[in-house]
Length: 137
Image (cartoon, rainbow, N blue to C red; front, side):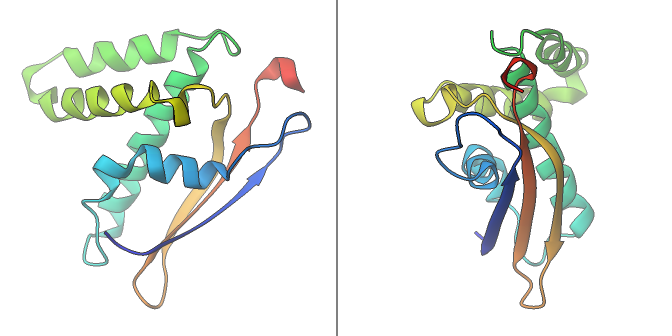
């Protein structure tokens, strides 16, 4: 697995995050993101992170604190729509199972703005900010 530095800027006014949201996302997406290395094309690395974040946000927004289950339902519908979506179905299933793990289940922050970059030493840096549920603001 490539080296990663993680930094997050939480915009939370209430309870602080127990760890950086960027660390949480990298941990959550590890089964998929571990496949990337310094040799991976940046557009593929970006797409992998984008998928992990989309799945994370859909799950968080489906929680009672956010009350928006439609995104997760849409993602599942798309994954199940055609046979060629099998890789997406498998990745969604892996990440959905991880969301139920205790270290992820109670995190109610979504990912807002984010970006990745390849550093001079070819390691991947991932930066993101956390967004709290609307009722917490």
